[in-house]
Length: 328
Image (cartoon, rainbow, N blue to C red):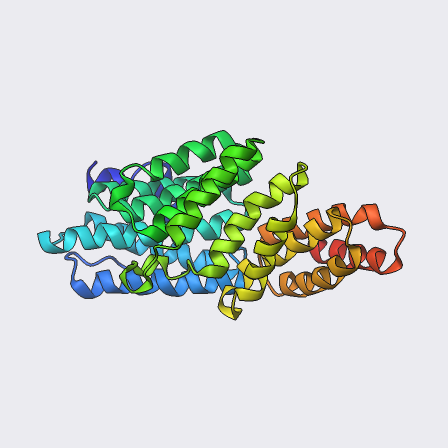
């Protein structure tokens, strides 16, 4: 695929609707480093504040400038680095769009990220893009497509690091759980756990720095959450979600809110409303600080499950506060 083709089509309309600085005629190493810095900074903002606020507009402007460089004259030694940096930035911008429920934009951005990575045989960044494509498909109610994307990401797994493999096994597990395939879900979680134990942080790429114990427990806990709601014993899901909620630092406020909300929801469903109330109040406070439609959606699910304990006055108060937050 040519550089021009990568920047054309439906994605071009999305990007040209966002103002950006003039693109230089010749790509320099500093330009590539600027794209990498933008990706790192925007991802940290997205995790801290959510993607439904100012983060997404800022990210689109950065990506338009970066995508424009694909049409500029690029020294051969820089080409792979340029395409890799643009791919990484596109996944960050796509993730913000996903969080803002701009799903068509997110699909185009993730596909663009895949194309950029494949253009220069960057298998790790290709895996990152397929992981996000899988997660979005699952979220949008198509776990079959989510499973396909996850398995495409795992193609040539020998070229992926342990963290990248673990990440994609988690995507497989979440898709399989949504499909009600319990034994295959548990096998995928087992494969993820095995890969996780082989991680050496110093040898992982900078795009995988987020994948620590809290992230691993949160991702696997989310898959087990779906099994627990379908009747599977909830203890392991509760343990992993608790570890994730306790382990995420302030820089990953949205991930922490996701895991804590899932934890409270499962506690409600499992018949422990008092503990669920405490976690639910904390989750409510955490989500209230975010601009994340996905976090609001998870909070609304907590409110629906809490309805079964509506005879308790504190639970009724929590449900009312959840309704006010989601509607704001």
